[in-house]
Length: 340
Image (cartoon, rainbow, N blue to C red; front, side, top):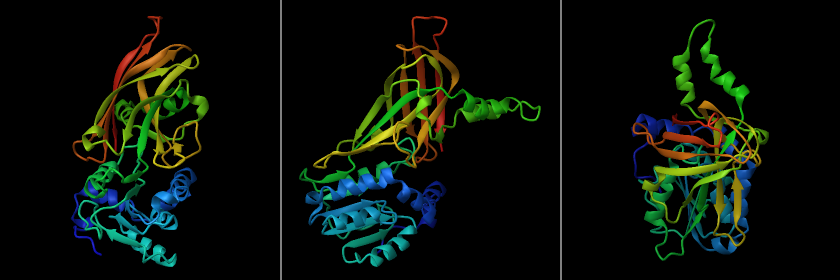
């Protein structure tokens, strides 16, 4: 069945750029080789065949259709995969090569515009997570599909269904000097206007566990059965206990994912304490260097909302202050970031 919506070329530039970025096989290769990601989905589906047997499944943002094929292997009656990018052409070939064309229908188009061959589905599966969990705003699309197509008797399932954002403090002076301090003297010239810009761009990178100075702090959990699009713009307090006496140059964020519908819940983390994932971690360098001691804490408020010009980008604000009895080391501040 063909999609009813317009093609990528008819989309606004920011939207077209987003979908076009998934046209090339390279990004899908990176995701498929992410064993933490892919095996977690596989285990959640294969180990719960009783949930998938004879069910109609919707794969939102199906990519190369690996999740769709997992679902068929688990006994699904039929799977509908939806993706806007042209990788779906290759996905059809992959599905055919694996003898599943009679079980999997692949539709190219925006989820909000395609016409599904079933009025409702029993299960929604999707790998929707972006950097800092919400970057690229694909969660919006999953929630739309939930409200439109997931069965209304309360027995519909979402895989995965819970996501939690965490924060911690890290010592990262060498890299901060290299990344931020570089602009103080560029071949003898003052480039501090670009230093300001560098401080407002979060860094997506792998953080070594030894750099983490604090305990992790859960900031917000999204339950995909209940959350609304409005909830994705949030303002939440955090409290990070200091684990060792050190400096804090940045706050680092990651997310954990849970498939709680499973007979034996499946979970994975994208944090510095876990195996590598392609999401890595998101680092927010602070304007100040915080001097902290074991037993103290950093507290504040984390705010996040879609960018007004491009909803797939994020505007993030972090208020922070050190909780210490030493007035000489007390610090507080406010930083703004754009994740684009």
